[in-house]
Length: 461
Image 1 (cartoon, one colour):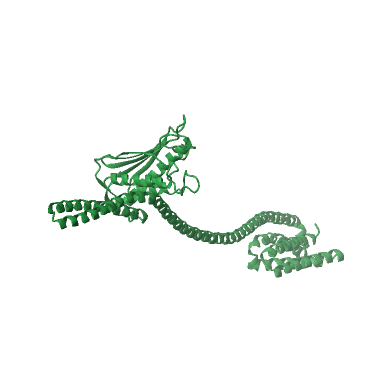
Image 2 (tube, one colour):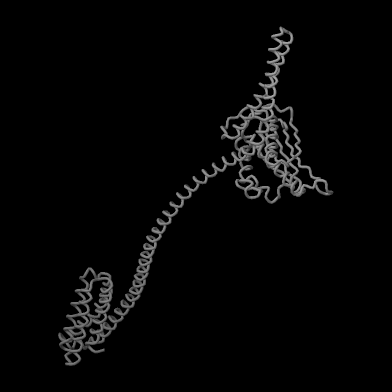
């Protein structure tokens, strides 16, 4: 290798390595400095080659390289490259010592030229080893830098996505909040509508009662009217007897009048109780439990339900069978609520037997063979079970299909045709019995044969 080629390559390696380092880590001012150093080395090598001025330029090379190395070692910004720079120090020392020995004592140089060659070779080996190690470290550092850069980019992407997701979450939260408020508002409206429908159901059952009540109240009123007329005739007769001075006859008439007045009073109270019962049924329940004769309550609502249907349909007729346990005393219940339950179950039973009757005798030809043999029958019974009372309402109607038996106590579920029921009757009954009285209401039904609704009410409530 020529005298100038080695320092040129050394300058080239140093300047290019430092230029790449400062391009990444430092300002452009440093990059320009090493670009000028590289340009100077190229110019110096060209001058030496063109003008064959090796004796002169080799000292410029020494000054340039020594100055460059010293300058670089003093820069704190280049501290990570210290070992890289030191790698060239032995080469420069050996080169400078050889050139200086040639000037000072050529004989000394020649006699030790082999040592200088060996030292030069060793300096090149040192430089190669350091450069190889530095190159591996530089590649590892570059990989680490790329990895950090990728991580930074990933973190930035995650941060951007996080902001986007937070925005989406906030937007979705606002939507859910609005939906929640809308659902709460809808729930309030639904509850209000349900309350109105429940009251409508109660008023509908009141309408069904009206005809029955009219029939029931007509009987005591007829008695009141009849006994009033008879009493008026007795008073006229008493006046006549008084004028005749017939005291015994007058006393007998007075005794008859007392009996008539007792009858009038009895039937007047009966009419009054029917009206009160109607009022109790129509108004919302107060929840106040009273000591009530359940047998009388069941019997009263049986007749009211029957006569109510008779008033609406003169052709309606049904056999009624009662079996009331006489050992039952009064029980503590809310009478208008339990009365409403019994009435609803009886109305359903009468409806069921009517439907079956109409299906078995569609034209009313009851005398033809095979037709008209079905007799509609409704049963109601009470039984003292010791710790609770059992009330049963049964019919021999069409029964309830097994696939819908479990649904009949659900609100708004009805087996009746559209316009014939709201689907609230049985659900109200279930709520009154189970929640209002801590009892039980269940049904057993055989399709085509009939249904049995059973109420159990605790006696100690």
